[in-house]
Length: 192
Image (cartoon, rainbow, N blue to C red; front, top):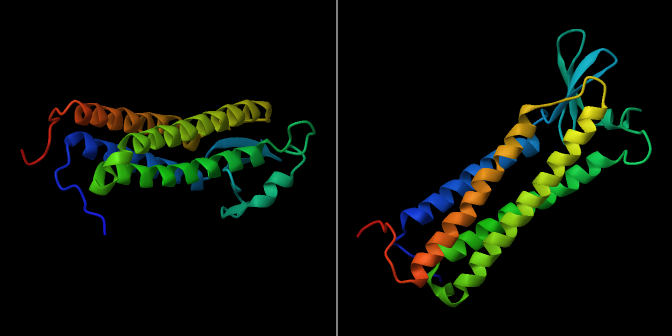
């Protein structure tokens, strides 16, 4: 059984806080239908990674993944760009969960002291994957949404861009924590 490190620094709590915010933003973005908007047959459609939603003539909201079969998305060349966005965001979601395990191992478990630098590197690597893949998705969606009639970006797109900030803060806080540990300096430890 692993022993947990009881005396955490404020940097550790900050890293966990940033991770929590990043995970929350990521899940909201991943599941929402407001990445971009387009006009199709006179209707404004809220597009997500998985479905498109619109209001019917009766005012009822309808959502369907069959919207991606429309001719606007089947225009040759790079018409499957939304599949790439889905794959990259799914890979980012997997990386964010793996980052959690590396972060917990790095900050909380005493028995992995000899692997501390490797775990810090894993946190950095997973953060880099998350930021890179998210940036690619943002570039893909912004380019393709501009090509569609009435296409404009939505709040999920903006939130995904903002999510890069807490993800980067996790790395900065972990490396500050590593620096202070390696130099045997106390860094705002709770309980001192």
